[in-house]
Image 1: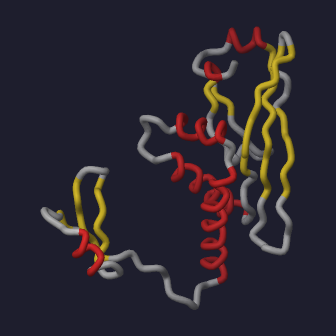
Image 2: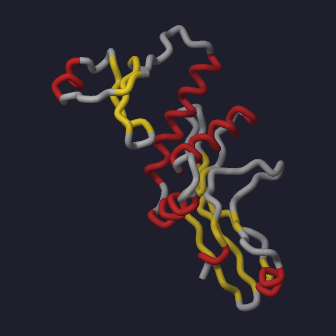
Length: 178
């Protein structure tokens, strides 16, 4: 990696595919060798991991505006961006269970007087392109409001599976819930 003092758009286009120019930490222009994609033949595991990563990237576009805003707010002030956290959750879940983690597309807080619950709209994707995707709803258990008032703050909600592994959902701050 080298620090770049001056570079023109023509030079960038001329060296495309050989040298990659970008801003390190968003401020310092640097150059590095062009990132190389692994060449076939891939191992079966590499090919599957690449397919999962591609599915993770495509699934981001299906998030509702509400969920997208929540993802962005949940990573303000922290080092990895929300997209990196999103992909990381999917890849770690796949590494652990060899399936794509369920993805929360939207959520809604349902107020039932003295209690409330969080209802999630969930997308289940599969690595096998022949298997159709599923969209379903899941809801939290009823949460008593008086219990929330006694709990230490801040309080966050997210989705976990039965083994307490995090699913693809942002942390929702309790104070943001109406």
